[in-house]
Amino acid sequence: MDLVRHLECFVAVAEESHFGRAAARLGMAQPPLSQRIQRLEKHLGVRLFDRTSRQVALTEAGALLLTEAREVLARSEAFMATARRIRDGETGLLRAALPPDLSGETVAALLAGFTRAGLHGLELELHEQSTAQQLKGFAAHELDVGLIHHPCDVSGLELGPVLRRELGVLLPRGGAAAGLDEVPLASLTGYDLILFPRAGAPAVYDDLLTTCARNGYTPPAVRHAQGTSFVRGLVLSAEAVAFSPRDTHRQGGGGSRGGTDGDPARDTDDGVVWRPLTGAPLALRHSVAWPAGRGDAAVAAFAEAATHALRATAGATPDLPVRPLHLRPASEYWL
Image (cartoon, rainbow, N blue to C red; front, side, top):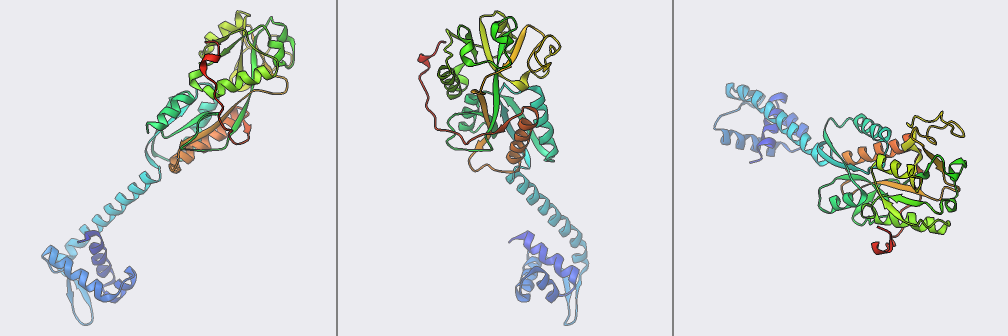
């Protein structure tokens, strides 16, 4: 017996006091409705209605059970509503990841935007992970959504809009190129290059070095580093440079220390300066990614919040769709 459906019939007849009106309300014929009430009475072992040719009235037992029936129906609807929210991603746990190169301002804006989506029954579990780590998480079903760098292998994933963040160069303040408003890549000749470990995003790593070579800069060596302090220390040694987005240096305190235009993104407080590259040849390319078929409300809210945060706080601009991968073996690079 479908108890919920039978209770719906019971409540409708009780409230309408008429089988015909109750049947019309339920969208069914009167004979099947009468049969359901009879089956319910038999199942419960009590008579619910007194029937005459002119009216239908609740028995004493029916009146006592009517309140209980309404509560069961309310709990059933609440149960189904919760199931729908879980199905649509509006409640439960959302496992998300962001790459380590985002500024604090961007992360804060993303979280604020996600909160404004109003998914109050949803818990966000946020991790800092490289693109390679995120792709492994997707494959292992341990990650629901993330912000990845392109190019990378996106098979089995759906993507949000691809955004571009221009890369400039971090230089020692005393270097010759630091005096330029824009720095040609070829003018970095002689400097080692500081990059993230290739395993974190192999195709991005390859693209950066290929673009440098095409523009006349082949570093004597590539040094691997990720921590901000360590990178700055290597730059301060006056032997190495690093590529970095403008937005990650907006909070530098040295804008008054001799920058060419007073832009705090250009001059920091520790002897390191940021300069744009001539022609903007280098960029980080991002998009939100999630497993194919998982386009629910939670993923949509995260994707919208991430895209808006990158555009509002990091100056990210729309870019072309992702390109095919052309990976080179790691042995070709300095380690």
